[in-house]
Length: 220
Image (cartoon, rainbow, N blue to C red; front, side, top):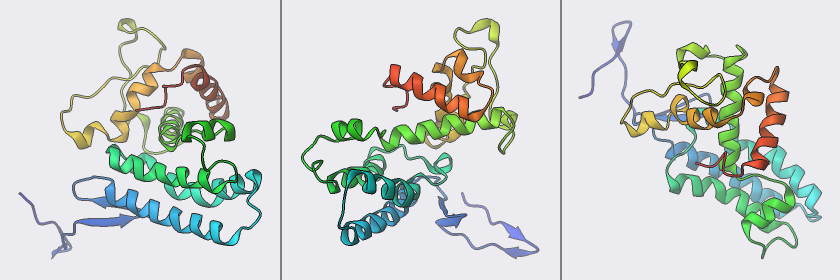
């Protein structure tokens, strides 16, 4: 059942989706529209690079991709990170297209190309961004307050690091994949030396080292 909302006595118009600070929010909270928007923007820039850059050396292409293309599919992903396979594949398609634009990479397997270029999949980067954002919240460096979304577990009853988080009871698909839920498993898998980092840069460095030892850490 839909309820009418009013402001200053005026009934507000109901819409299927609304853009807020560049992120499309649907009434069902699904991310497909935002994924399509991000893909379209990144795809246009990638096409422009392909048409206008003649000297497509690996170094030049990497700099252009990281500075002009990838930000479009990574903007504010904490609010809209996709969980449907079709949406994940759509976003990942940008990076797959980019690799094929580099001379010598067209016939390489995607995973092999990423390893040569020392890149992670975009899915890994989204999950990494979630962990970094959570760490900033814990340190009081970002809004909203940490306590508004997360609760530490009883440390006497857990193994692993001392900052493990409690999971909320939910059976709704939308809530299950919301930032405050999806980040918990990855966070709870981290080692004590990572979560006790004194600053964001140290956290990033230790997280990178741990990811290299545990390759599936940042995959859904």
